[in-house]
Amino acid sequence: MPYEELKLSTPSPVLSWANHSLGAEETKMAKNVASLPFVYKHVALMPDVHLGKGALVGSVIATKEAIIPAAVGVDIGCGVCAIKTPFNSDQLEGKLKKIRLDIEAAIPTGFNENKDVEKSVTNWQNWRDFQDLHRGVQDLHLKAMKQMGSLGGGNHFIEVCLDTENQVWLMLHSGSRNIGNNLAQCHINTAKQLAKMADNKLPDPDLAHFVADTPEFQAYWHDLQWAQNYARFNREVMMARFQRIIEKHLAGGKVTKPLLEVNCHHNYAEKEVHFGEDVYVTRKGAVRATEEDYGIIPGSMGAKSYIVKGKGCANSFCSCAHGAGRLLSRKKAKNTYTLDDLIEQTKGVECRKDAGVLDEIPSAYKPIDEVMKNQADLVEVVATLKQVVCVKG
Image 1 (cartoon, one colour):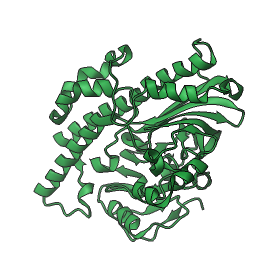
Image 2 (cartoon, helix red, strand yellow):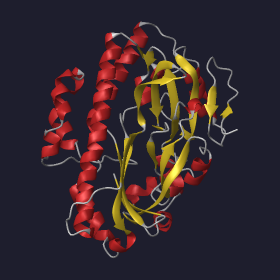
Image 3 (cartoon, helix red, strand yellow):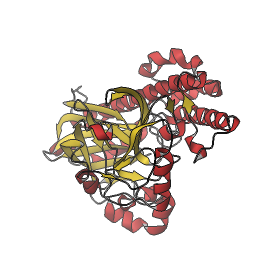
Image 4 (cartoon, helix red, strand yellow):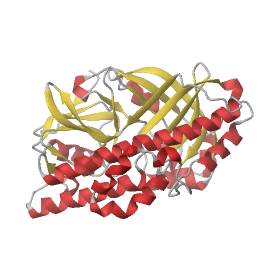
């Protein structure tokens, strides 16, 4: 059987695709979510599941008549996009370092933002709805514009990869930046205040939720969709710049057409139909995988990544894993490994090899091959990629 039902004796069952047993804290988190009265059918845990805030990262939660903003998380719409280019590995020969330096110069990372706002950003249609967002973010309009087309920090990355046929792929991982984070925090605080006022006995304060058809629910849902659109377009803006850099180095600046384009969220909520009913599906560190969906499952910066096609598995609410999933916390990774380990584990990858990215060392993540093996019923592999350039946030 590809998944197992955990023995938790909760009102809603928990189905797990992970091949490891959950730790005490993780079990408690799964139990807390599965005991909420509005959870629909069951909770699905993906193979890369690990500790999160309120809900496990790598969990899919379908709900009726309610939504939990902390389960969606603060990086609303975080996800990955990738394009298959018409170039091959021979054309990259001797150019990797120049490409990396050009990417770092063109796309701001960490807390940085663009100095100027480019035309495609100014023309984004959704700016006209900005004044309808939560009043707590109204002073962030210019910052949101300047951060559109910037990577952010943590595990966000930009990579040049090769598939098994030596074809060049471009891939990047980012979300809704500071504006998404602020919107999430505003609504999470409102949900917690409402829970307090109603004297809701929640198993965890981070499971404070909004009930459908209330003004608070509608305000959150509106802002959530806006931030998810921002995140998707943010990736598109960066990918267009990234593509121009690759074309400059490999095609003398000639514009090329991608052979395949994929852009998918893995921290988000959507209204969907499952088991014949309309439900709200929250994917916290999970990718939608219906039979029509292409998805991206990246490994760590020294491992393989996968482009996949969904199999539409009903019990996973048509979802799959979103990556390798952390094995060690950032702090633990820094205390466990040295700079020499990082250099060794990122051999053959043109990337930063300094203390600033030690917490992203490949060994801090679960083995991606295991994750893929555990979800053979959720997705089929379309392409297997290995990065040759990696720019970290």
